Each structure stands twice: as C-alpha cells, then as structure tokens.
Image 1 (cartoon, rainbow, N blue to C red):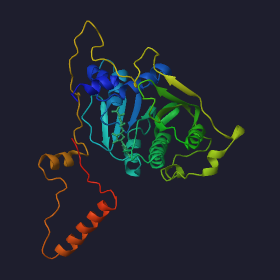
Image 2 (image 1 turned 30 degrees about the vertical axis):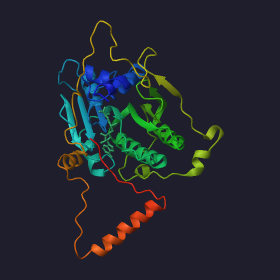
Image 3 (image 1 turned 90 degrees about the vertical axis):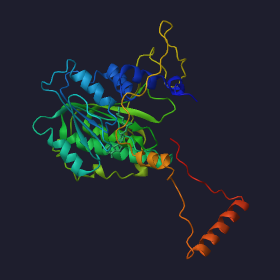
Image 4 (image 1 turned 180 degrees about the vertical axis):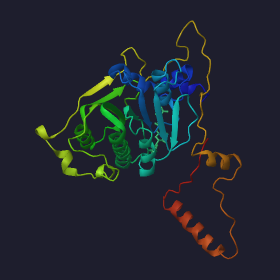
Amino acid sequence: MGRSSKDKRDIYYRLAKEEGWRARSAFKLLQLDEEYQLFQGVQKAVDLCAAPGSWSQVLSRKLRPNDETSEVKIVAVDLQAMAPLPGVIQIQGDITKVSTAHEIIRHFEGQPADLVVCDGAPDVTGLHDIDEYIQAQLLLAALNITTHVLRKGGTFVAKIFRGKDVTLLYSQLKIFFQDVTCAKPRSSRNSSIEAFVVCQGFNPPDGYIPNMSNPLLDHCYDVDFNQLEGPNRVIVPFLACGDLSAYDSDRTYSLQLDTSKEYCYIPPNQPPIQPPYEEACFLKKNNLLAKEPPPSPLNQSTTASAKEKENNAICDGGEVQKLSISS
Ligand SMILES: C[S@@+](CC[C@H](N)C(=O)[O-])C[C@H]1O[C@@H](n2cnc3c(N)ncnc32)[C@H](O)[C@@H]1O
C-alpha cells in the first residue's frame, strides 16, 4: 500500500492535511458549529483532551480571527505533550486527576469560560463495556471540571460513546443543562459508536456547589437505572450534522477530487511530538524488541520444560501468539 492510500480511504484525513489541521477531528467541531453556532460570543474556552490540537486550532482560528490577543483565552489540556499553538495556553495532565482540574480551574477564577469542549477518548481495548465505561469516566471528569469553570448559560460539548448505558449520562447532563442533544457530524464514521453531546444553557440545580470530591467522579453504574421506561426514561434528540453536500466519511474518494488540480501528496502537518509509542519504535529500529534472554545454565531445565509445554500447546491445537509491533 502506498502512502497515498489513506488519502483515498479517508477524505477528511486528506482534507485536514490540505487545510493545515493537525487532525481530521477538526471537521467534527466545524460541522458541530455549523449546526449550533458554538463560537458565537465566545471569548473564553477550554479544550479538554486536546492533543494533537486540531480542536484548539479551530478555537484559535475562530476566536482570534486576526491573531489579536484581546480578551480571548483558550486553555488546552491533554495527557500527551502538544506542539504550541498561537494564543493557546497548554496544560499537560490527566483530566481525571484533581490536581489537573485545579490547574484548569485556576485559569478561570473570576472570569468563567463560555465554552468547554472535550474530545477525550481512551485507548480503546476492543472490549466494548470497558471502553464505554472509561469513555463515560472521561466525560464525567470533563463535566465535573465544567461545573467549576463554565458561566451560567454556557455550552459544553463532549464526545460520547452511544452504548447501552448512555441514558444514564444523558440524565446526568440534563441535571446541569437546559438543552442536551446528541449530534453526529458527517466527518464521524457511521461505523463508529462515537457521537457528541451538545449541552446548552448551563444551569446547575439551585444550591449546587461544585466540589472536586463529589460523586460525579465516581460513576456508579446501576443496571436498573437504564431499564427505566415511560416518562422516567431520558431520551435526548439525535441530530446528524454537517451539510448533506459534505463528504461522506465512510466512502472512498479518488485521489483527484478536482479535475483542474493534480493530486499531490501532503505529509501530516504536525506529527506527535512525544508519542507514547516512541520507545517501541526506537526498540524496533534498533532490533531490541522482545528479545528473549539467553538461557543461563541455572535455569536451563526450567526453560526446557517451558519449551516442552509450548510445543505441546501447539500439538494440542493450542494457539501461541507472538506479539509484534509494526511501524
Ligand atoms: C481523539 S484525541 C483528541 C483529538 C483532538 N480533539 C484534536 O482535535 O486534535 C483524544 C485525546 O484524549 C486524550 N486523553 C485520553 N484520556 C485522557 C485523560 N485522562 N486526560 C487528558 N487527556 C486524555 C488522549 O491523550 C488523546 O490525545
């Protein structure tokens, strides 16, 4: 497969490079904005789980169109290091940690944010229940931070996995916001469980005092809760967004989109600066990956019996998997 094959398979990946976005996710926020005018009147914004930074780029370009500094404040947070962006304050940290939450909150004391966005996603394991649970934890951590920094009437947008327990999350969000909608931008693949909750009109319950140790950070699943029926069951409107003429993220497009322009391969414009797989790449490049230590005379007998077991497993039809990391 050539290096342009991803350009064919993923139109938004290709467009992101052409338009100078760090990731295809930029289009998700742009398409959500087309529907909800998220940036109208926004001067202070928080981008949670921001790396590599395409949502922060969108915020920076939309809130500071002429690069002026003025009153605009954008704070971006991620576990991973992120290359700098104009007008964006960066914090490297875990949003589920109280210390990170405090650092974010400190930036908005006396000047609350108008908008909080969170595109956080765990490294998916493929075990759906676990992935959905961790995703829900991220969303709740983001919501908890939001209750500290968002002004009344402000907006919260967050990635959500529409799994079987999603109604519990909807009802928790409805406690804090006048309007909660679930939206699927056209740039988000149909095959993906991902969608975005757009929560407008922040209005915490009377007497609610944001508290970093409150149970929002300890999301407890109650099976019965999700079986609620009738008026007790919270169902939020679902909206597909992004113009119908927008590209379909599940389709493959030919490399030459425009007959008047030759296709030209563009490399990603901001590769990750400190990716978690950096060490594995180094080990692989230097042929140091998964080398077994040579058997020492002392443990030779144990090694031999382990080898015997492995052979038996293969003979019994057992599967012995060898892990490899490809670059
Ligand atoms: C889909 S990416 C975000 C893409 C980003 N919106 C953009 O446009 O470039 C998900 C991010 O969530 C971050 N993340 C996952 N768990 C986190 C946590 N507990 N605290 C902070 N960031 C987290 C990951 O490091 C990853 O960068």
